[in-house]
Structure formats: structure tokens, C-alpha cells
Image (tube, rainbow, N blue to C red; front, side):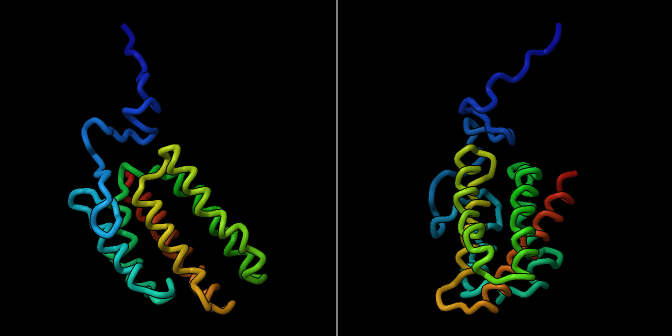
Length: 177
């Protein structure tokens, strides 16, 4: 007798990452300053570090990439909840914007930059990414194009955003095993 395929995929009990709503694996309440938190998760602390900055470039690359740094803690938190394919798809988009920004001006990527959040919202609506990842990226986007930032500051902020996402991709792949 052959096993029956899982017919519940995408029908309310599980999403494509195997999230099980019936077991309450993810806290849907909006506590802790509007952040969804998992039990034992450091996402709130990491988001607070980002929230404490006016510009994303204020975060040091060391704080992002070191052992037990921001990216590693986020990757641990997202383990089993953030599909590597979805993360890579998003990262490839922001990295191509960075390449265009290196040889151009902010206005050359501005529309693509502003479309990042709606594209994330679409992925979140389809349950392809967790709420915490949506909150993380939204917060980072706010810290890239801050009010009153000049062209140079926007580029610095965007570069730090790319570095954070690059480190997150690397640690996510590392912890995937």
C-alpha cells in the first residue's frame, strides 16, 4: 500500500514550509511593540537594535556578521520557517538593485526599492515568508531611505541592507543542514 500524499498543503492547516497553525507554532498576537515573537526567539531584541538606528548604516558590519550577531540570531529564529528559495529570490532582487546603484543614482532604483515591500506583502499573504521576516525587512527599508537623507547616505544605507541580507542568506544556508 502506497502512502497517500499530504492533501492539506495550502488548505489552512499548513503552508508550504510546513507551518502548523493547529499546534500554535507561531504566536499570532501582536505583542512586544507590534512584533510577532516566537517562544525563545531573539527576533525582538534584533529588531530593537535596528529600530534604535535612524540610518541602517549605523549598524556595524561586525554587529551584523559576528558569531551570535544580528544575522546569525535571525537565521536561527527563521530556521524551518523561511524557505531558502524565497530568501534567495528576495536577495537576488536587492543585490541587482545594488549593482545598478553602484554605477548610477538613487533615482535609478527608486521604483524597484519601493516595490520591495509590496512584493514581500504578496509573499507573506501567500504564506511563503513568516511575519517576522516581513517585519524585519519593512523596518530595514524604513532605515534605508530616511527623511532628509542625501544620495550618499541612501547608498550607504542600502549597502548595509544588502550586507545584512547577504549574511542572513549565508547563515540560513548554514543552519539549514
